[in-house]
Length: 216
Image 1 (cartoon, rainbow, N blue to C red):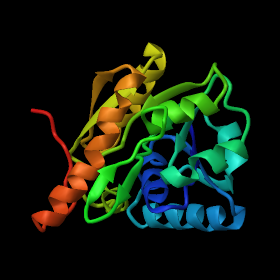
Image 2 (cartoon, rainbow, N blue to C red; image 1 turned 45 degrees about the vertical axis):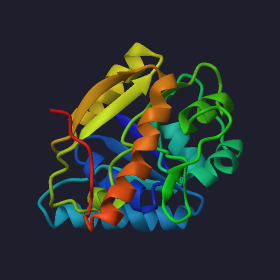
Image 3 (cartoon, rainbow, N blue to C red; image 1 turned 180 degrees about the vertical axis):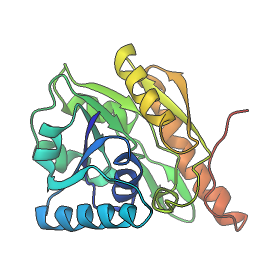
Image 4 (cartoon, rainbow, N blue to C red; image 1 turned 60 degrees about the vertical axis):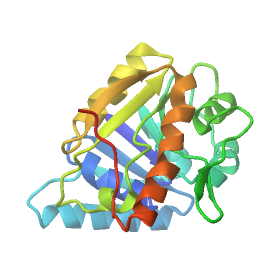
């Protein structure tokens, strides 16, 4: 599978690139192509030291979109509108949103846009033929980067296009010990996104680390 990661040099993007490039062709995208190239070289080197072959390259964000059959938006919520307004070519693409609209005061809280969720905002900004799927929302960034540790979490997947949702669920199930669950249509994304501030609060107030979810 050809996967483009927009914002692939952030903590989540780099961790995703490392884990996904073992099995898929990955383009690490960034506003700074030189930074993406360095990230790609580090990913290849890190995996080679483990006896693994990485299939990835560093490109600008637009080239990551053009490259991928699946495009992952590994960007903070505050960057969604400016980033997507600068990009084109999402027609017929499966677009994965792990984006969570959250804010912090005395605690973390869900702070959605008028559309109700980051995923629905993203859908409104993309061509109608783009197939937006919510996934990977509740996994801590540092857990993605801890490559030698298993990711043993459940991943809720939301979307309105059944084929796109099946593609993303297969992608999820191919990463470490992640297990994908069909959580329904894209309208459910607000529930999935709101779990992340809950996890952050649980971790903070109970002095825990890397809190995630698992359905049993």
